[in-house]
Image (cartoon, rainbow, N blue to C red; front, side, top):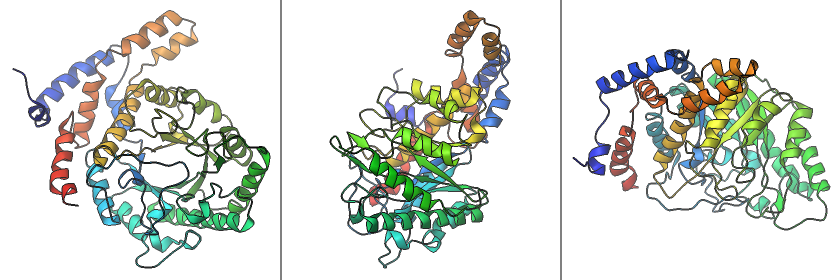
Length: 431
């Protein structure tokens, strides 16, 4: 009998079928020396930082009327966009209820709650984010933070921390200094270090004459921003590179080489965004390499289809390679994983859920790899290495995933989508 889409969505997997499938999978994995229970237990300790900007199309709550800039563009007009902090928190609550594990929130500075007052970027303070901190605390979550160096009149010419005008640079320096202080308060109140990520849109659309001077100004600005030591138990500094962007196709001040050098020299976290390189370039090989020289990294999981297009993360080869690199080389304890995509052409809660669940699935697949792979390579048995890697592709990791979802009290299979559609009907459609 052919089932309709509606029937498929309304058929949650039974506990009995999940258990039967899992027991078979557990046996199959045990045959190659993999403990599925240990893999699930490890996965439960890995937090993913959900990016607030997926829920409202990178709009923020400053109410200044300034549109997006700095190479950021969100396409689509799917109904139900969050319009207020309370709506955004409610949407996040719904998404988190569909994602197994305990996770984090990644917040941008222009999502502060400023009431009826005009608070410019160089005036933000911890009290403007206290509601977010209280919400995270009630959910037992940590938080991460970002200064918002775009969508502002003082970023209109495409340059912020590397601007030729000192007064413009000083404005953004003060904004970033305040963002660090806010991050430290978040980390202290939540009992978990807050990673503050530095990304700026600075660059040229066409070929520049002088590539060095803007980078010298950026370096000087960063030195001033980071001059004050803050407790690493409360906050950690990360710098994010980029290859290109809309409006900066020919030259980006904060290039990969610039920030990699700066992070190594100053022992900051280097942020690697999967969508910030050539569209066909994977970043898996970069992770372990840069961790030879920097203390920790910030990983932004995204999917670039054309340019820095920030598509919803799918369970593709690139994502699986990233997770495999982290797990095989025991790099998870030095890696902070966050999401960075925005899609307004589909249900925004579904976007969060799909992207986060796929990231976790890729980590689980890596955790289910046997130690025999490393042993075979060490012994020079490359035939066994290849054969085993290929065999793993057909093993029933999906049954382990369903069991993990069940143990974390979230829907297995496609049942989460029915929950999302119900929320859309009852809440999102009324906005």
